[in-house]
Length: 165
Image (cartoon, rainbow, N blue to C red; front, side, top):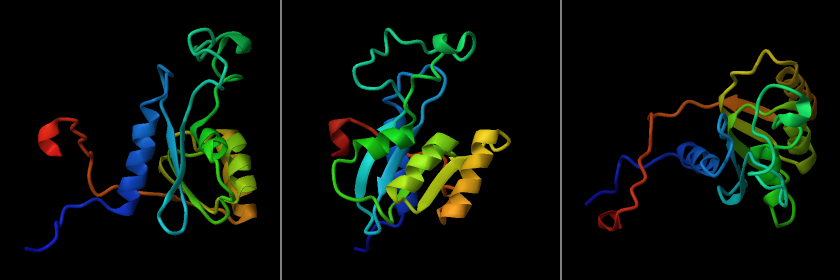
């Protein structure tokens, strides 16, 4: 018997972890997850967009428009920042981060400062925003590589039924 041929790639695996983490987000509009991986393909940390610890996601706003203090924007921690802050070990120097959505400028600063050297993402739908342009400018200056990755499959199904174990 030979080994399976339809196993997922490392990129599919780590992006899958990022997307699965995104499902923890309470944001009704945008769910983003992040997965940080070291050079040995070991997961260092994960995160998703959500309210900071101690700030109830039932009491803080999820609105996208209106008075700024009544929107989610001043409060929500992005997935990349949460993944960096969730890391409970030593250095993230030389690691890479998988994220569905290209990082904003605030997350780009945290990525650079933490020592992450590669950003792999699925979508750059906000490429024309100043915050994303600033991210790319900072990544280029700091030597952080970024790459849009294309998955070889459209979906991975996770089944929790005992018959699959």
